[in-house]
Length: 473
View 1 (tube, rainbow, N blue to C red):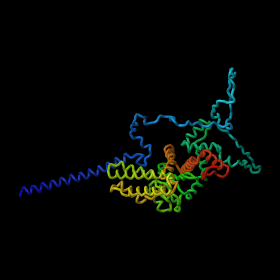
View 2 (cartoon, one colour):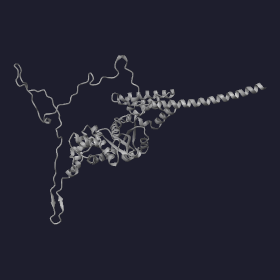
View 3 (cartoon, rainbow, N blue to C red):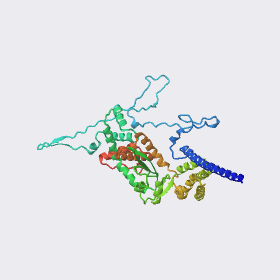
View 4 (cartoon, rainbow, N blue to C red):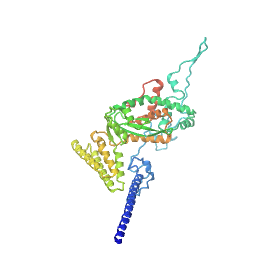
């Protein structure tokens, strides 16, 4: 009897120990899962997330290439590349010429009617002219009041710096990321033209005012565009977090329009595109774009580059089921883009059937995800917004990625690092206008300096302002 009681007590103590060990094991497994997720998160780089490539500098160096070949090419020109030389200045742009000849031609030689030409460009000692505009003073003989003859409006508005020098200051501030103090020192040291810090600021604001009509013209043209890519990035102002929006329009009337706003939400899209916008918006998976899709007639082309990075991240996780799911999905995506790249090389009907099949296979794999949080999140994305990833298959000319506006935003990121943001309303308006002008001129292959210069002339002289809506004649 006692032996049976002791046996039962021993079994209970053993069960208690097993339960305690099971509890500890469950906690340990949960902790391991958390650590594995954290390790995977810390291992994210530019290929598995939206992190910039500059964040990859902490990665270990790549191993040398196999076969004894160097993995990194040598600096300078590469073998087999055609040599590129700048074209010579035409005769009408040559200001002065010197001919060098032998004093006495040796016997057996004769002079040819050809020259070996070396063209040289040099700064003139004083690279500007000073004009003095004098307004005659007149005095009223009865009252003694003194008045000056009116100056031309372009002289009054320009002030100290003329149109071309005003454009240069604006170009230095906007395109060259130069601070006001750096511009002031440049003019004093190089041009021997000392001006004040405040004068540089006034000059920049004149250029900003001159570019305002063109900027507003592009803003009004946004709702009429058939397609565009949109992206946003952070903007700092006196410690306050703002957002720089980029609206990038490809095509014949291509342009890029920037806007700084306190909001990152869909109300920015509604304000500048309108609820009746029926075009295609290329974008990432940020919630503001999805909300805009629900509340408007727009189409979305969600970015495949962002999606592929997220899928690649799944293939790095330690959970085998999630990793296999990511690999299957990545394989179907590759097959889809192999089909897409054959567009134009395959008969239209045959290509449409192949594209429809590739689309079905991607959706089938994406929506059959294992019961893991990361995989289920991916499956939910395809269940709710899967169609928005395939607009580029239905509408020729639509890009499957949002690389266009992201390339334009790189300039902003550099500018943000150097200038440390803005300090007020005037600075925000200047940034919006100069960023828009620089990006659009680069797209259209036109000189940004010439555009700024012509805008300033139009502002000083009350002439029609230049437009960025179409290519120059």
